[in-house]
Image (cartoon, rainbow, N blue to C red):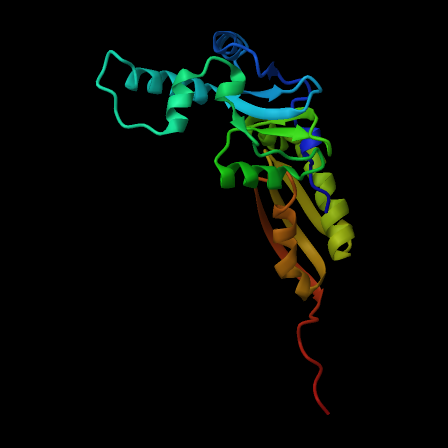
Length: 223
């Protein structure tokens, strides 16, 4: 079955900055354009790093904690560098987690969860930025029209995957919830149909009541 790829949901013209962009300018970009993160690019358009609003807040926190007006706490070299940062290049996270445009949306979501990151720069094979994918972009698969989901259930699951007659199965989709009933060709299909439908992009849940024409689970009687 086909799955939606990152290229289909990503923001294709994300806001970007250069290494030399001042943190004051960066803060203005994040606030005024209402974005959570921006890629930091080289002059050639390749991704050098990623900087988020939390990075700026962390700098402010460390700057206060390590300031001369307070008793300084013990700190690492990295913390001192963050506190002293003045540009995007000095504050950015280098070597951010990236994805290719043909990455399935579900895989991109797993990467975000595994690495605990809020967005993923989408790059080509040379590392050049093509787009940006965050939670809002990845959630677009849940906005697929019900009619589109129904068509995929019939063509890819019933016909393509199971090879059963779709005219004998009633399929209804409402707000991403798939409800199915009818006759499948073989009993062995009963265990496969719901997981296959659930794997379709945009399906919230699936319910099904089925009969079958042929019991192919019984072993032939030995002679």
